[in-house]
Length: 361
Image (cartoon, rainbow, N blue to C red; front, side, top):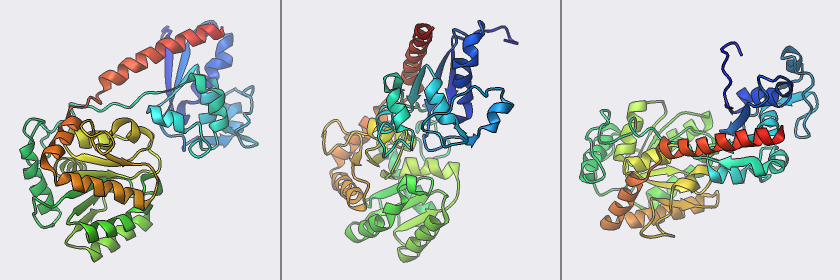
């Protein structure tokens, strides 16, 4: 109002901005300046809900906001309020939009989400293709593109040297860049890596920080297998790029993954993803075992070490088929996960949100 500008849509993101669609759908309805402003509310991660005492409503002069059935007594849940009051809601992948309707993934808000499921959509996050481009990336040992994949071997050699692993072009190199916590599937990895080192010649490189128990786990595994793995327990943006450019496989065994960007970056760099088919991972990675000739990686359904091992086994078997492996790499590199497609979907949601706001009036 101060700017004398009336947007058609306000796009709010996560619990931090849940107050915006709430206000527009209550107080804003009574003020002509705001009556036609629609609200789109994007859920990036339902686990973070912004629960506070209801006293905050007094400070915000919003005492009239109704208590929701999914809220604990005496509290206000800003994620829930945003969901309840927005004209439209979306998550950052289609699969995650389906998953949060279930008790297993709904984080206690699935009853509310099911009430609003006709207004719930999924739009995949995009990747900045200028920032993530192996043909121009100054951080990697050798630049390459989809038509010159032999250059990846130089990056693999440099990565093995940096990790103080044996320089073996023939040994499959599995990489991970991840937060170290249960949500990212860390609890599966000790038996998976034990199996990997006993049943294959593969090497493993990890980059990440997180919960102390997983720092200890990787330090223990590295002490046991010093010639086969290296755990970099830190944040290092340059090393992350080198892992994407030099590893053969990229492992993401997530328990929950609303979207995920690691698998998109990996494919962009010709690093074949092995993922759990959940959330955005399911939407972006096509298993080559199930759809040979169309696959861009490998996936597994059950959240278990055995299922993860099976996906890795299939990937390692395929790695020994160079022509098929290269086709998988090239299909992944040619995928379009840029923001262009996602932006078009958001524009369509903005139009739908405006129509919904007008319908409710």
